[in-house]
Amino acid sequence: MLLSIKYNGILNDLFAAGILLVNLVTGRSPFNCADPKTGMYKYMASNQHQKFWTEFEKKLVVDPDLKDLINGMLAFDPSQRLTIAEIKCHPWYKRDVLMGGGTLTSYLDLADRMASKI
Image 1: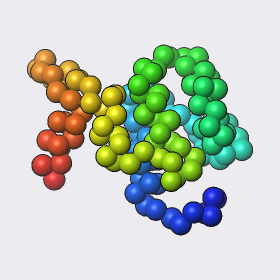
Image 2: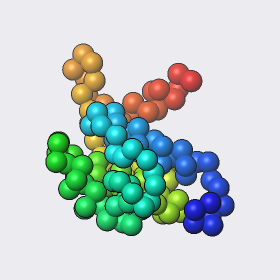
Image 3: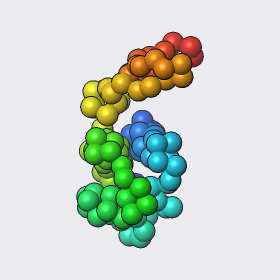
């Protein structure tokens, strides 16, 4: 317990989902280790998101809405992380996406379709 906050598995899962989202969309990991004193994570841990994205975007540009979503999912203080409901309401999440076969859908519709198959 780095911040003396009671463990919350869902908030930790949302952090991990944020890392996976960055990997899936950009093909790169946001940081090698979630150590608040070193590497790229030190910028996230100290709420210096602009410094993080300036370094990260040296190799590719990231959509501003996606950056905002990731900032919320990777918040250092777990109590400040976006909830699932907030993620589902986020502008980046609600965007239309092109699916195979040329059909448009939103991430929300896609998530609902996937959940119904579980």
